[in-house]
Amino acid sequence: MSHAATAHHTSTGLDNRKIAFWTFIGSECLLFGSLIATYLVYEGRSVAGPTTHEILNIPLTTISTFDLLMSSLAMVLALAAVHRGDKVWARVWLATTAGLGTIFLGFQVYEFQHFVHEGLGFTTNLFGSTFFTLTGFHGAHVLVGVLWLTTLLVRSFQGKLGPDKALNVEIAGLYWHFVDVVWIVIFTVVYLIQTTPLPTA
Amino acid sequence: MSEQPESGHGQTAHPSTATYLVIAAILTVITVVEVGVFYVPAFQPILAPTLLVLSAVKFALVVMFYMHLKFDHSLFRAVFILPLLIAAAVIIALLFLFRVLGA
Image 1 (cartoon, rainbow over the protein chains, first blue to last red):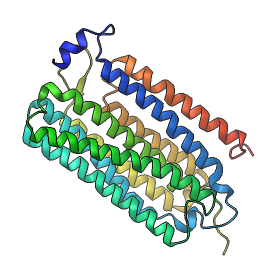
Image 2 (image 1 turned 45 degrees about the vertical axis):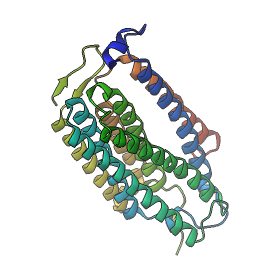
Image 3 (image 1 turned 30 degrees about the horizontal axis):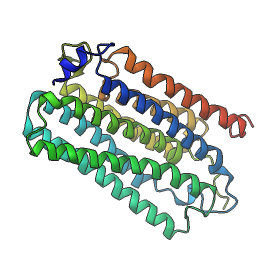
Image 4 (image 1 turned 180 degrees about the vertical axis):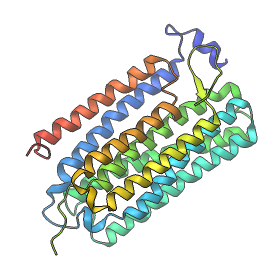
């Protein structure tokens, strides 16, 4: 059954899957809102280091932020290609999106390893606990997104991702862009706005 | 910024590829400005509000153009914006409650 045909049979005239997914994204706003609030409340209350100024690597995170922003561009281009019925470019952009997501995860794994090496673990201090919880949850979402995109790519190679299935790609895209906007907030409030006072020389 | 209306059931008129590229360029420029502002000592007194405004602009651009909320049905907007406002209110309330703000 096509998307359009499905949409006309709902009481709202809109596709129920899309309404359900926007509702899910709304609930995700509350989840990440709580995690961000918890981070902001506790980040500056650590009684022992390392703290934000000592450990956060802004240049590295800027690159990973750019990587995730460009993955969002690749995602919308993939959706446009699926709408056009352009299988080749749909695969190229889906693979690009998943690839950029994987690179982002690589950056995060490197960052976590570096932090642990520098003495910041999950239980080291309040900054560590809230930082790893917030960014870890986000990373888990990115991982789910990469797996989702990979399944779409496989479906495309199986010849089962034509224009009639564009809504499937659009919903995956909504998820991916949401993960991106969450990172936009995290990059600002965690990495760039550091409430912990600068250490005195 | 141009659009290409496509579906016949009143849900989505997606932006063109050119629009997507322009948005990506704007997002990149804003990110560069954010990081630049972070390193300029003169901005330190107004660093947080400046970064929050820039971040909000990036957030809005992605949601409006990449998630198509600007062109979609108003019900989607309501379902997203209401929880977003609640989340923002929770963050602000907790920051005041724990004296991170207004101390």
